[in-house]
Amino acid sequence: MLMNVIAGPDPADSTCLDEPAPDYTAELGKGVNGLRLGLPKEYFIEGLDSQVEQRVREAVHHLEKLGAKVVDISLPHTEHALSTYYLIAPAEASANLARFDGVRYGFRAREINSCSSITAKSRGRVWCGGEAQESSSGPIRSVLDITMPFI
Image 1 (cartoon, rainbow, N blue to C red):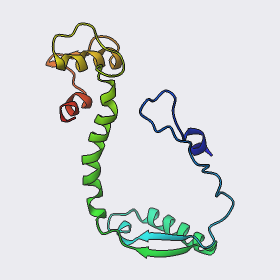
Image 2 (image 1 turned 135 degrees about the horizontal axis):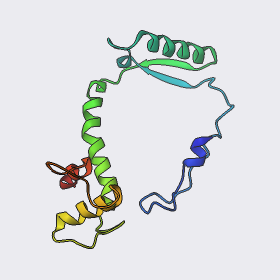
Image 3 (image 1 turned 180 degrees about the vertical axis):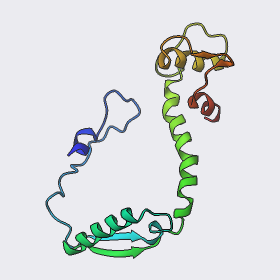
Image 4 (image 1 turned 60 degrees about the horizontal axis):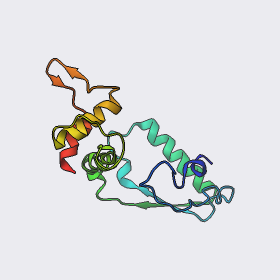
C-alpha cells in the first residue's frame, strides 16, 4: 500500500515522468498458486549466513506449499554485481544532483568568479548552511564536488 502512496509523478520534481502509476495493490489477495519463482543458485554461496539461508529456504518452502512453482535458475554474472554497482551509483547520483548545480536549477550564488565556483559556492550555501565549510587544510569537499567533473 505504501508503494501506491509514493508512486507516480512528483509535482516538485521537474525531471520525473508524468505518467500515472499502476495500482500495486491490485494483485494482493490473489495468492501465489501457479506463480513461477526463479531461485538463483549464485545467491547461496560460501559466506552466506546460515540463518539467512535457512529463513530464505523456509520462505521458499512456504511459497511452494501455497502453490508457487520454484525453479532453480542461474544468474552467471552475479559475481560482477557489486563492481557494477560501484560504477553506476556515483554516476547516477552525479547525474541526479547535477540539476542543483546553480546553473539550470536551484539556488545560484551571486559572488562568482569562475565556472567551477558556481557549483562550489551555490552548493556550499544551500547544503552547508552558509559559506562552504573550511578545515585547516582548505575547503571540505563532498562526494558531489569530486564526481561533478565527470558529468
